Length: 549
Ligand code: NAD
Image 1 (cartoon, rainbow, N blue to C red):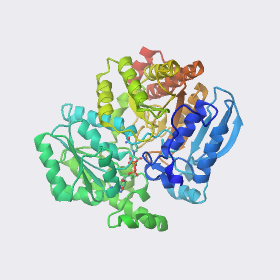
Image 2 (image 1 turned 30 degrees about the vertical axis):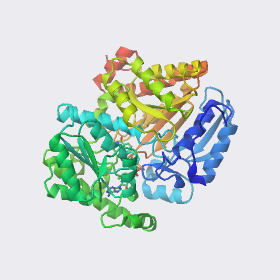
Image 3 (image 1 turned 90 degrees about the vertical axis):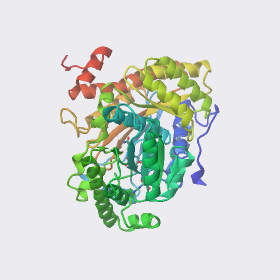
Image 4 (image 1 turned 180 degrees about the horizontal axis):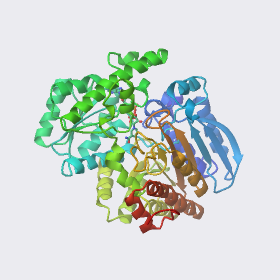
């Protein structure tokens, strides 16, 4: 049965080298039922984000990866293997392009028409580029974001505050744990009870309330006692948030992680959960209108909370854009999370660095955790994260870890892991990649590049350069996508994954990729005029021909 894919473990190879074995295992891992949201449909996360176009394509990619030589490169066009070309040992073993459309054609109806014809696939960010590691992947970013909210508004902790949000899917499921890790109380609205239960099973969510009254009661008690708690409520956010506002519930922070970027993946008010898929498939235009209207009500309530003094932000799902289309005039009254909290980190080339143990052995990740603590002893926030995540987070699929590291740091971690593979301290190679939600590889005017200092929000040359740079630097696979995070027409982004197999060649590739990839973040922000980025470039010797010093 196709839905029971699980990554191979151990040191025996099905492929001809660790580079191609790694790609194979990470593709399989993306579809592991522990990792993927709907593995039977090849959907990994983010509503409809897939790892391969269909099952025939999945099997063909898997077969090619087992046959591929060290001087060959497999081309994957939106989830379908379309060619194997002769290259060389420094070239990526796989090059991936997902969901790209010529700008004038780049909207959801056209994308869906092409998808129905079997010509394309939505890969979101790490689904179609085979480096999704389950909800932990987003936990660090979400933890950092809520920590930044706490620093900005609440004296460094969320203790005694109530955060209201919605969506407990693959990414959104990280929110309750990120809030409680920051000592706060979270009320998370989710229409699908199965999704909410899954978060309880994986210990991301503490409990599920019986109804709205019960939920409000539980969260207000915890807030009053200064006790961290996360409560799930089964309901539609477009109904629950206006009701919370009407009742004047004292909410301190409001955000959202429903799949609003895709109107067909947001359930409108008045539509039954069981009718969702059928209705969206049969009448996509009518469904889109209704979901946008509901998002308008949802966002109207978010603006209402902001008017009452709450900290409100868009968490990168395009809900403001969709609500505006649905008639909410004030949708952009609150900011996106990147300009509000994350951009200073991007200026240092920081972003979600992640790695997975191809052995499948959790002990390998424990050893890499220790290596990170030894490498960066001065970084207390990083140390707190590594300790906490080690205690609280269950692995999904292959054991993996994420932490935010910047320019000058990532390559040191990569080289260290490679040495640990070479010495036998780790039982098998490690794959090192990142999310596309990163400093120098995304153009996304409603998210990563919102409100850039020089107005360059929509300039998409940067992710293209990023993919080319990683290809030229020795990454094992490189991907270039359209539409991730915020939907078709709204973003262009690139990813890389590089394998630490313990060889000298891998060390040379890792040193270049893990320097140049975050280096793109530094130089992109220098170019946009950020003094913090110029300082990092000057201190670390990033050569920028026309930088003003
Ligand atoms: P997902 O599809 O796995 O989960 C979305 C959840 O929202 C589902 O469980 C769904 O049942 C629920 N939902 C839909 N309509 C609802 C409604 N009206 N009321 C309540 N719940 C509703 O998606 P995901 O992977 O969790 O991603 C969520 C969104 O966050 C996406 O738009 C994604 O692009 C975005 N995202 C943001 C970041 C970031 O860092 N800020 C990162 C990744 C993804």
